Amino acid sequence: MKELGPYKFNSSIQFSDFLLIIATACHTKISNLPITSMKWKFDRPGNAGKKGLANKTASDVMIKSLVDRKRDYIFSIYMPPPTLVKKELPWIKDENDAPLPDFEYNVNNATSSSVKSIRHQIVAIDTASNDDLNELLEHYPIDNHPLFPGKHIFRNETGFFGIASSGCCQGKRQCDN
Image: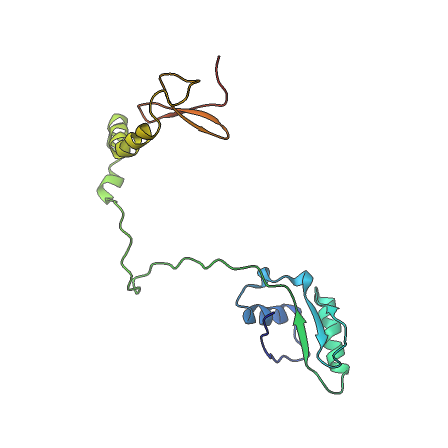
């Protein structure tokens, strides 16, 4: 169990602002808080029971109880850990010292694709994917599956797939007899 705090707030606090304080303390977003499982109790007396804190009404009851007390205003909030927030990927900005990722891109090629014929585009794709296709053909040689002699076959849980030398995958869900 991890303890955070103490935190101060006034009696006119809204439930959404109260949740924001808790989310900030937990280094998460409000949407990641297990609000329906949140409970609170006064620290004194030690045998005080935990009360729900799942909505605005419960929050108002908690604040009214605090206002009605003459002393010992300290209370604790109990909840399971919030769901983990995946760290967002950093945006690459000009002020970052990290170098930009390398990738092959040529503005002239991107803008000139409409000028090229379809045949030229197909040849360019075949050339670019030739190494990957050869690797696939080596990994799945001809006659690698007894149901499909003379073919390069890839199989997964959805079916059988024939890899043609042109690079196209032709899916078959079942064996054709």
